[in-house]
Length: 322
Length: 186
Image 1 (cartoon, rainbow over the protein chains, first blue to last red):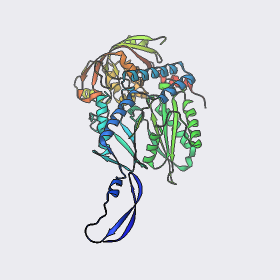
Image 2: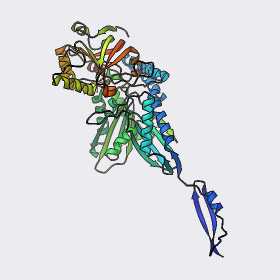
Image 3: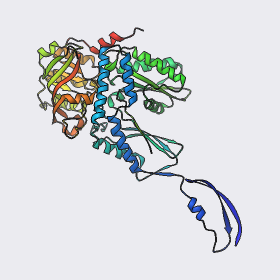
Image 4: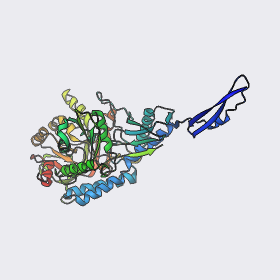
């Protein structure tokens, strides 16, 4: 016999709904829960690891063959402002190189990089099949093999090559929603070697920041294959600061920070770096850096962390949303 | 490129003596590749009194780890790697007759001094112009350390390989010269 009812508020992958459930005493409950069953679908969206593997494979190949339009436009802008004829010849060569790489679908640079991925995973996503890291590694393995990309990863002591360019570096952020955004950012060793982290005293202020970044570029000189993009992280903890500096490189080349204070800092540093006279390839000129990108994050009251991550002109990224 | 100097590899002292920092060169002939771990092995072999896998006399060493060749090609992309990592080993190879190095980036003062002493030049190719540079490489053969993959030592036949002299045997450094010319005084 029915002794009452209750109302349930349900939320599922299909949305939200209110359902009345009878409370029944004894056998032969007449309530058919079809309403509930039809409505029920897990909130989590399932993405199979095979989809991740396929998209990673495609991105690592594409990133290494096709230089972004933003970089080409930055070269063209550099051509207009470069004072040195040798510097202009270098920029023209780089434009030609990018065209050949695109037309022949071969790597822009033989150093096809350590495979770095920024992943923004919606917290309503469930990955089925393989672990996220394993799926990305498999995509890297397939892409570097089938794409004739160089395998550049080795044991730090024995220097034995892992043979398939794995493991990838995966930087994971969990965000709202049910999408999985993956950005492939392969990075060459020559420019990565020029990275630096320093923990400034808060008293160093903006001047200390500018001085360090400019000096770092001067020390890096021709090593990181200028014209470069300079990624700068300010604040956070030590490791957060390094991630900020690398993340800054993902922005379209030359797109200023939306924060006017940071945009001004970017412009000031760009001018000072190019005034050093090092130019394209460090052979002399006025276009050492194509852009400076700054990202900031709150930091400890005792600290002013500052990280520099210089990217060569082959600034390679591809993005996919699953 | 205007005023381009054509040179043939391997090099001899007379050819090296003619080159000045800032000269644009076109290299044709045979060069050998070696980078980080290959250099360590070459110098380890010298330390152990063993022969090198090729005669170093007159050779030009290209600091490169090429990407794999696609079917029908002799090589993948093949631009220079950063040279300072080979600074520790460079003089040992100059003592064995090395006459040229191709890479990118600045060299240590000790290496520049050794270049004067042993008559060896340092060239830069355009870092990152790897798809273009590959076109000047006509034949490739791995001759040592195959287990190192991209770091194996390769014998390359090159034609019209473009480079610029950074350090000549007279102590000039194009990086310093170029920078001084365009530096905006503070």
